[in-house]
Image (cartoon, rainbow over all chains, first blue to last red; front, side, top):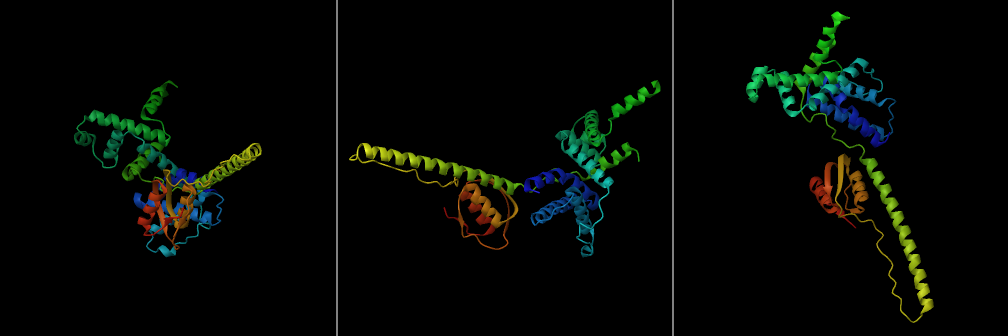
Length: 174
Length: 154
């Protein structure tokens, strides 16, 4: 594998693997460190002649091991032997990829919209509190939240509220 | 669990942890390839230059021969083009190194700027640096960062 090929995989898998580590560790900073280190170590191994059959599967296993080691007080008791580790379940990989799509969707929200979304969903503020905080109407907050949730639902792969309502509306006629 | 419930749970999880600028690439693993490609490009450029110089030299020799044959008393001034070196030390070039060993940095700089570096210390020195500028400034920066005394030999 060339450096360029590895770099491409690094950019493609960094966020999903970050999400995978985040689910295990529960800290953005620590999970980010773990994943960046796994990529660096993996590249060093590849440069030394290591050829993983399936790089993605290998990286998921390496991130899981590194995350568990990070969490474990008895770090030395956990093996660093990624090749013989159990494969990561497809469901976990799917969850990580869905999380990555959600994360990216939040990143790509317009700044104002993202701020309102985070104030509501992360900080737990009510629409009224957010409206007061930002000196805007509650209706504006509601509109921005609708916009944000629509983007996130799309990224997640489910129909937006309006589509669900239309389907329900048409059901009696079927 | 219904998909909408799962969505609520997952989007809540992401919202609680979301941090701007997290999980961004900090390494450039493609750096080696780009240097290899640059080396290839430089090699081609050198090959082309050498060929051009050889052709010019041949033309000058032929011309000199013709002129001495036509008028032996007239002094001929022949100046061959000199300096086939590829010195790009004053060019503004962007370089990125992520936790790279010093030897790799030195190779990269020599390839990129067409210079030779001297007084490079041995040992496990590594460097992470994103830089855009000429060779002299780059080396000064490296020396400041690593406490080294690397010099540009040519």
